Length: 211
Image (cartoon, rainbow, N blue to C red):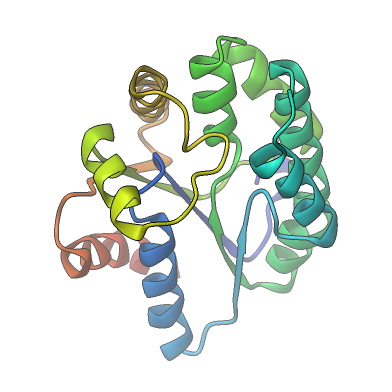
């Protein structure tokens, strides 16, 4: 959160391209923290609230045309509601929030890959959330070709973003890395091709001093 709205909890977000292993690492971190007696709220964007689940269906699974700006605004609307109703209350209770995707995904996907402008999309999300930023953002960096092979192996239908071409996902990866370079104190960048247990250890090493 912002310094003026400091909360006693801890907020950790996971970012990366589709197929990079965000869900796996978020769950491993949740298990580790829960075993140490910490109260953990596990959530995601979009879809962390009832409103978010409806928005998720529209932006990821709607088969009709959806304009790029409409897509960005829907993600931002979900984000605003999610922070107000899930994230901020949890942090005020002193809980640890572990979240799959936040505004950095919008910067990468809509700002960079869709060409709407990284700064414009980031500023929109900051306005919508009263400048809320996570304490730590774990970026799981992976070659898009490797990520696509992982998704293919899952043998599940692709959503609207997963189905985009390789060039789109290359722009997403580049944007994530640029964001991490701009905010090195917040980001932990990891090679997502490493063994999941090795990744989990590195994430714990970053989080432990903050508990």
